[in-house]
Image 1 (cartoon, rainbow, N blue to C red):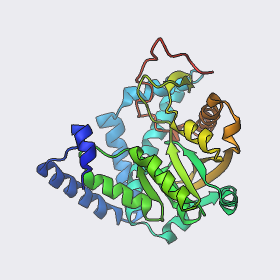
Image 2 (image 1 turned 45 degrees about the horizontal axis):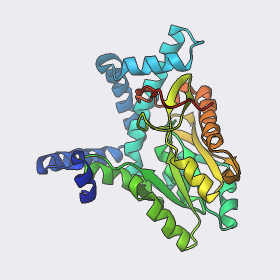
Image 3 (image 1 turned 180 degrees about the vertical axis):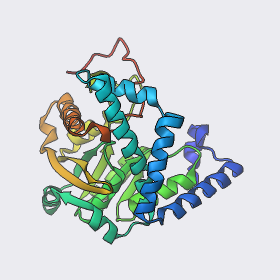
Length: 314
């Protein structure tokens, strides 16, 4: 069901009858695809790779430019090699995200290993909530399976899709099937207060590497380019003094991953505002450099230019 309050604020959330029908047909097709066995999915992925890279050339200029800035020390041939690996992973990831809809606990146990989960569970044993910071790297969608093993209630923050309620329900079902709860970004405060009131240890999961408006007060260097960041995670962490953990997925093979949970900051309330985001950003860069092809290079992350009245945070 379309959120009427969002439609009032932004007409782009409106979904006409015809569009709603077409969206439902598309989602039905995705549901059918999700039941295909992995070998068939990866055969489709191989075909997608050829089409996206050589026929459609999906965001080729954006990907090449982003990689060239991020790795100025690499040759053009090396950048092209990373680009090829990115397209292959992107196709695999896209179909793995669709497959998540029909995957079982047994499937996830076979394909996702978890490392460092005891860090978060120890915090929950103390009756404390925490903040989880992730980013668009490797297979972040399968990371939602952490809820099946975590003692915290996983609250996954998301931005509602514009004009596509069927697709939004499809994605949220895949994320929430392990017990987590998806929270629209405009309802974070209400959700946090409710869990705090009921003394339920929760973890707010945020992916803060998305692009905020150009007038964001926090700009710094990210992968060798000036970039703005949302300051919400930092504000929440300082106000609540909840420990911050960093989560990322390592790719160990085609369709196989290792979810890593690391303590990033134990007591954020004792730090200066900039230190929290800078620690998060530098950690992202460290992971990206290990396997650059797994980051979402097709995203127009650096599309804004820093306003003259906003200083860089270093």
